[in-house]
Image 1: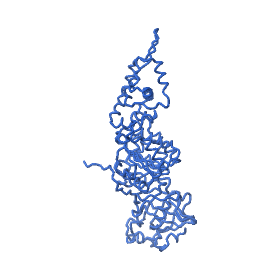
Image 2: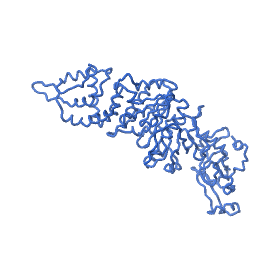
Image 3: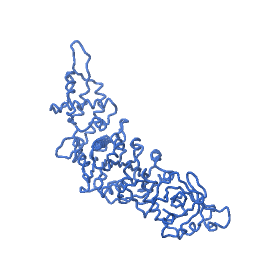
Image 4: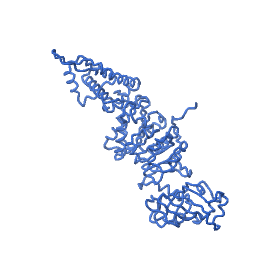
Length: 539
């Protein structure tokens, strides 16, 4: 690619600015020779504002043709009218711009690539970049060389709003995508805008919605809709013990042990066909232990409604052995007191009428795992799961996400899909302990790409997301953030300019940062026409 071919059909001298006079490792400085650009406002347009910053220039160098961004603009005179006198022979007069080189086209190439260790040289000529060159740069932003149809535009560039953002799905998702932003920054609108493009182009998507915000965004013809506890259930036999601990948010290992013992006792009662709980006070110790040992891996079902009573029934201990050889359990007041708060927590969870409906074997309702199994094995289907009817408790959401994550990663042959989880910070940690709910998600983040599972997460608080999970995310959509801790969490993805503007972003304005892009992008998201229940009521 030559300079003349870049400006084909244009007079090259009309775009000439000046020459490079200083070269540093971090930037280069050019002195303006063509001062008419700075004084003739008739030449200014939305694309060409050379008396400001954040516009693009082209530098003709021996290494190739560089594309640079102007980040500093300074003149020796305070009076703008005096700029017209430049070039009159006064040595003290100068007008300089500072340039950050961001890409290069080599003579053998026809697209921009990262400039790497290549640098500019003294006396290299600087030209103002045209809209055509800028569009060529946009088309070169994605490092992926795969032949892939881009998504329909979901945003426009903030610096030149006539240019739509066209990115390939792999650019957004192949290193996982996270959308972060404070309340009312436009995060949910961005999420729906991208989901809209995925669904309308027929790409497989699994959506978990904890608030019901997107329940009417898509039609039944576009996506299969499930509402947990209303039309969808899951058998208690399908839940692993660590997932029960997430659900009931056990505070310590002793509560986890009590929960495990109680579930095993209920599994035994279900095995023998008894619909009551296992009452142990006065029972023969050897007989109870023998009964519980008879519970096999196939005896997984139990009546979850009896769980609070069964935990209370576990408040027993072995008596001191006497001359009468008393080998029967007796009531333990200390254990009963220790288990009381745990029983109350479980009873509170069960006050949600949808809770017991969800954990059942109702044949007239959909089965969650069967629906997911059908989803992962069909090429063009998408699935929406509304968890809002189960309540706002983090334990339920964390358990469901962990269950779904572990289930899909265990499948051998699946069709690639995007796994969208809204407000993932809700499932960061238990309120009662330091246990994280991210086990299944972290596994997906690490191993999911090999199977074609790509995460799309949203959160208000990136600091609440597991550092291991956050470290696997390669693409960020960053809305306005106000807290220093949250800004520090994303600072490794941003340059100094973006860091200074992260608090200034308006609603819907986003910084798109990705390992799959040559440069961070400032974009304005286009609001989707689909219905969304996220409006803030007026006071």
